[in-house]
Image 1 (cartoon, one colour):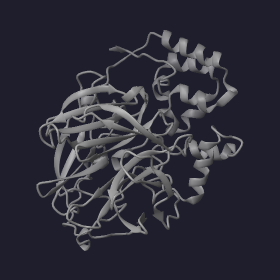
Image 2 (cartoon, helix red, strand yellow; image 1 turned 90 degrees about the vertical axis):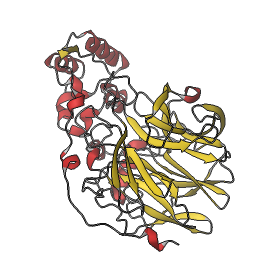
Image 3 (cartoon, rainbow, N blue to C red; image 1 turned 135 degrees about the vertical axis):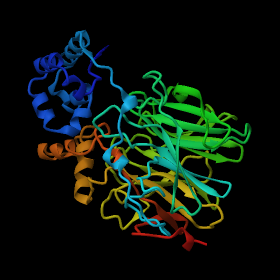
Image 4 (cartoon, rainbow, N blue to C red; image 1 turned 135 degrees about the horizontal axis):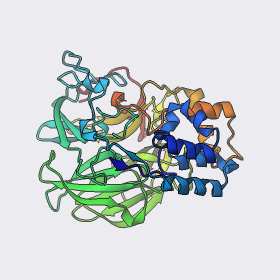
Length: 450
């Protein structure tokens, strides 16, 4: 048995799991539990977030009193055995398919054994004639348990269409709850770069949520084993959001969402293990859902481009493209690269990397996740979610009805989405007058690009 330490930062699901804490919650916030229990997506919210959404209707002294009362409770629960967490039904399912000669954006993508590919928030790396696709392993993530990411998984392909599962190259760590790769640590978006100075492979991993930090690991080979060099790392004290890293010669640059107040460009140390200098910023002065995350940076013909998403959790939104003359200069927005996108939600996806395919002059692939394929967004819903989110920060210019707010609260949330069934949207980027454009294709063949 272990003590259940509750506070305003506990999820509603945790608070409602004990009769005593339910009673305390109802005493200070009458009526909210009944309302919340009818909205499963909200149960992953912390009590603090629910109070924030309520605006000025809940006095600060009431929130403080609830926090004190929750912390004073002597509650005990069985220690969760996360090491025994089972595969989700989508993680277990095997469907044998013949080899593919094309990529099918938005369709279920299976490896050569017939299982769903689990490389979310991922990236590609090319080495010794093979493409390696790596990312978050979500095959035990249900949205109803503490499991966020079950290690990092890698795949190998010679043609970008058929992928062999190489297993977990970074394993989950059950040694303690503060371990970098504990399944509840909210480990996201691994990025691997090779350091010119040391010859080592360096993997940066973001921890989302309250942790808002990096883990930085190092290995002698692409698939490890990796040794943790930095944990709970916040460059220059910034709360860490989504990020990308680009390597230009012997120098690496980190592009990072800093405190949701703008994207900052940082120069990394010679060993690529820390950030040494803040260089510039872009996208400052924006609030959710317009502040930028999910940066994907790439270079073409001497120009540097940055693709980003807005901030709406796993629910997709409109992308933006920005351009710069150098990797260490500010980026300037040139608009949404998704052409003919009736969804106003980046073809219902979020980009994690732009990969230039070696040896193919004009094949740049935008790798993206369709995190919540069972929740398609159209232009009407995109507008509703935008207004519902923005009105909290700018009620003078954005308004939403109570009915619309209820629609938003029923949308998939970060802590309640079943991302084990997330799909992928890979699309080639074309260039028109030097500007990146992404068009929808039901299927396309990498072999068509010479």
